[in-house]
Image (cartoon, rainbow, N blue to C red):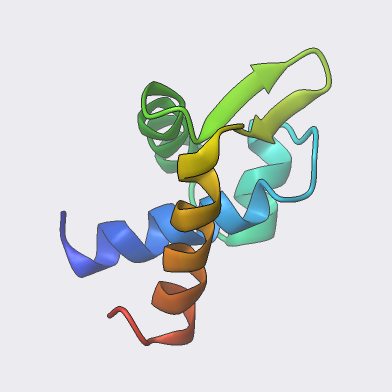
Length: 81
């Protein structure tokens, strides 16, 4: 995964922390294109980091999510870049 892709994925994962968002809202909140958000959500959902609920997209559950969130925070801060 490129640094750009990792940063975009990290931004979206952190945006999911606010429960129940649509793809449009996530796109607006992250500044990413709608189609990019769809692709990243697909990837995050396959790894169990994002889930589609009745309320919209939410952060996944499981022990791996906390580690992924911390890594995402480091990437966004520039530590993991």
